[in-house]
Image (tube, rainbow, N blue to C red; front, side, top):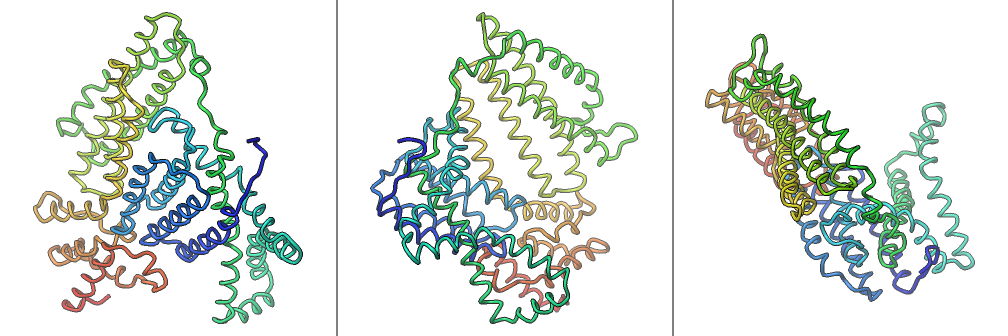
Length: 499
């Protein structure tokens, strides 16, 4: 099929209404934006539309997509269980990307094997090029379905209004700020019935751009239109850096890192022994050079990736020299990550856990796994590095999503405080934390004294005053938040705590 060809049939025309309703459902579930049980509801609706479209079109379902579908379903569960993920928006975006990639696989669009080096090109085609390439599909099929007489006129008008909608909203805001009369009329017209009607009409129009994108995804995957823009280069094209140049660049960098580690050996030795250098506090020592060490480790990943992917060998022994340098860089990176992780552990033992400290430590453990696998690949060339790292990253990400990090941090801090290991910990930063920490804060309030007790009381008052909007309650519902709310209300009634 030519790249500019366009086809359609009855299945494509029947898809128009489900996709539009799916777009309206998205606005109902996510405006105003919040995440909870609405996430798996929307994903389920996407798959209902996808399976119906695939059945009507007669397309074959790729059996290899079943595993990815299971992963998508599992990855959506944390939104029902917890509300504590510090990267909830990032989690949602990654999850939607996984949904697109799963649909891409389900429609048999993938050009490269699963978990291969070419997977990133398939992912780019699934998430970027195919939707962009097919943005015209919704309107072209709509024009064919209703593009006659008055329907065509109405369709063109709606298209224009949908394009102008963002500008209309922006102009209305500007006019309200610039003119008192317009602001007065805007306020008078903002009565509940009129506001409701306007919001409904606005939602129906705002669903059109989203429907355009969703339809582009379904249509593009079915006809494989725009699914082959990104392609993995041939091996001879990929390996273009002379081995001499790679060695000339990596050897001085390796020497500099080794020299740095040797010169700092005594200073870093105190990290593992738990003894602070002179004139250092725990906070200063933990933060000193932490980000820099992690930055060097990430730089080593980039250099190793370039060396392994783009080096061109003229002689067999050059391959061994490059592998040796890669092992050396990996060892240096492991030493620096180990030092940074030891600093972090020392800091956590002194000041307790936070969500960010848990995530940072988990990320460093992931880096350690990457470098260990890289070293293993250098000694065993047949080792599937990309596949192993991809699976490990996926498992670690899901583990982090299922871990209620806020609850884990406060639980550890409470236990350590009650046992005397910690003299106190910061509760002020928990104002935007998961509601699941509230039962733990209640326990701290009842067992602590002084400033920590007052901080716990302030946090409980903040939670009591928090607005639990009924419009959002069902969409952002999660089990941990619901249980925390029930526990707090019961305790407040029994204790007489004033919010």
